Image 1 (tube, rainbow, N blue to C red):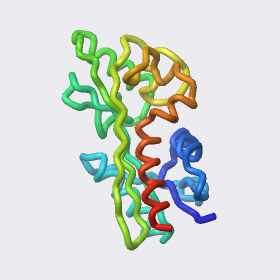
Image 2 (image 1 turned 180 degrees about the horizontal axis):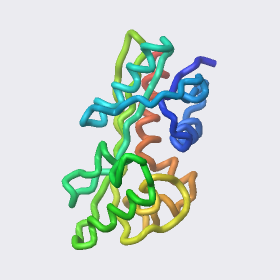
Image 3 (image 1 turned 180 degrees about the vertical axis):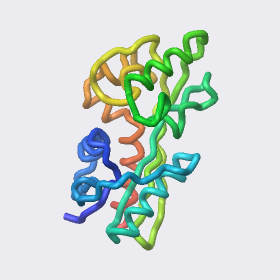
Amino acid sequence: MKKLIFATHNKNKVNEVKAVFSAYDVLSLADIDYHHDIPETENTFVGNALLKARHVFEIFRTPVFADDSGLEVTALGGAPGVYSARYAGENKNHAKNNNKLLEALEKTTNREAQFKTIIAYVDGANEHTFEGVIKGKIAHHISGSGGFGYDPIFIPEGYDMTFGELPNAVKLQLSHRSRAIAKLCEYLNSKT
């Protein structure tokens, strides 16, 4: 089985990817004993995903993909966007991020939002990006203990429960990351 590095330390993301990606042996940064943080210094999802993928490829010379994901809320002009993980501070606290977002929306009726993922793939000869988006809205309160990040306050389009309440199998079918990963898989399959 071919090896493919997923440039992340996030175990939740690794589990999501491994659930939909069976053709390759997907290795996280922990699996390859790389424990450094890769600064996300770009101001777009595409820029950050490419930065991380290029960085890891330069060190390991193995095909690699990286993602940058976030929540974009219409009433907040697309915020928190690329700052989703650090919305309430540098310590990346999910509960604080969710509470800050709910407070920011207290006085608005527009709850439209979308999750977006950009996957960047780098193998030395090729660089490609793949986008996955799921539209929905922000709930009025935290609901459900499943998932991670903003999942307990995001209600995907066509549903009346948050990602935190929906069964994991349903979330995996719908998620922005799954949609981007499916495009990456399609691309890799076309190369073989």
